[in-house]
Amino acid sequence: MRGKVVQPGLNFEYLMWIFTRISGLALIILAMIGLVAAFIYGARTQMDIGALLRWTFFPNPNHVTSTNIPDLEPNWVNAFWQVMQMLIVFFGVTHGFNGLRVVVEDFTGQSFWRPLLRGLIFLLWIFVMIVAVYVILAS
Amino acid sequence: MGLERKVGITTGLKYRGGGPMLVWLLHRISGLGIILFVGLHVLASFFTQQFGSDWAIAVNTVYESFWFQILVVFIVLFHALNGLRIVILDFRPELLQYQREAIWIEWAVFIPLYGLAVFLIIQYGLAGG
Figure 1 (cartoon, each protein chain N blue to C red):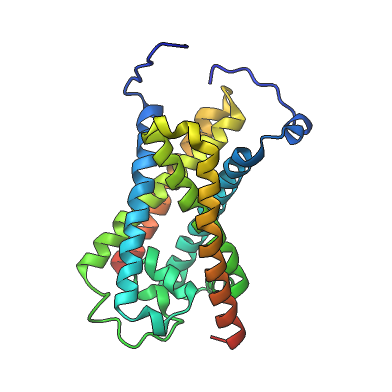
Figure 2 (cartoon, each protein chain N blue to C red; figure 1 turned 90 degrees about the vertical axis):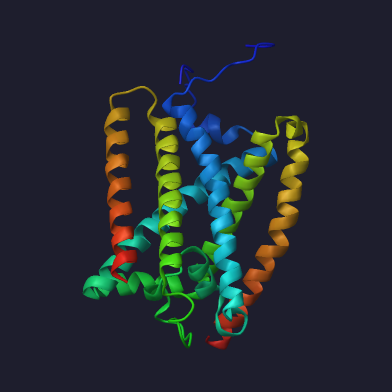
């Protein structure tokens, strides 16, 4: 392959390679938005790091019931943060389960386990996405 | 996957890849850790929200303990910073000749950030916050 430019075709592996990078950047940006918002809404004086991490990645009113933050209503309980959570769930869960698939397929190679485990990971991905979106919408 | 690899675990353990291998390994382990953590956490949140199940509340209690937070902050922060390094080097391949320096920069950013986080977690943990 030396000295030759390899043109990647638009296959599944290539798309997931690109998606992993895009979603990773998206997650960092989304987390930064959550972190900055948490500080603006008073995290510096009212939260420990665990609660800050929870607000950063998943600003859901059910998510911090054990910490004493005075009022959630004006800042966090609205459609904007629900959309942000769904974006984080989509990018995070898809990035994660694709990573799991890559690691698993590094170990299985081309055996009959490969399609089997790929199907199982796909089902798990769908399942976790549905449960997470349900938690967001039911909050 | 056209590669035929017959590397046993003992040969694998003897391979000394140095810094780049260490961050590759940590990236995989931390990624698998996040899947386990987030997957369980999503399920526990669902069962806490809908049924108030005891096991789900127990899982959340473990997650809220400060020694677990020390672990989670390490895993999340490392995975994010190392992922950022990979993305930058992949999108700017001309920087690949500096990949070892990039790993040193990554640790130089990671260690102060993580140290500060651990300090605050322990401070809060000991204060009973």
